Image (cartoon, rainbow, N blue to C red):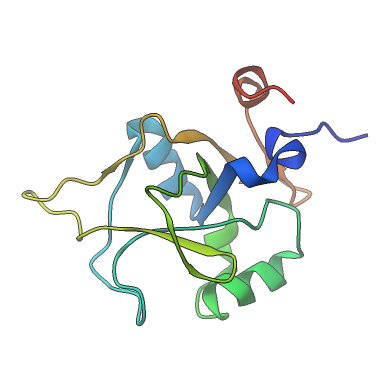
Length: 141
């Protein structure tokens, strides 16, 4: 039987930012989200997140829903888990939330995730997401 994660028990408390593995590692290391310069066609720039939990849907469906198949599958190789704070993240579409922000630059810092970030996980060999033990210790079910 697979271990239950905090968001399996309380899905309404968390959001998920799917990204490349190298980017998730950088975000985890610095607790800073670097906002890119290419805006979303309808919503602008910032940090996008979803309420679609890791493993909730097949990966090809997540890719279609979140990225309209416009990104490579590797963008789902890792996930940043954040607290669902609706004073920060605004709903912009079904299953999609945005922390709107200007692109990061020397004058404009990235988004500070201290206090919001729960942790991150990476897809393993079996394609399921693996999370460090401290996620369970800090956020018990």
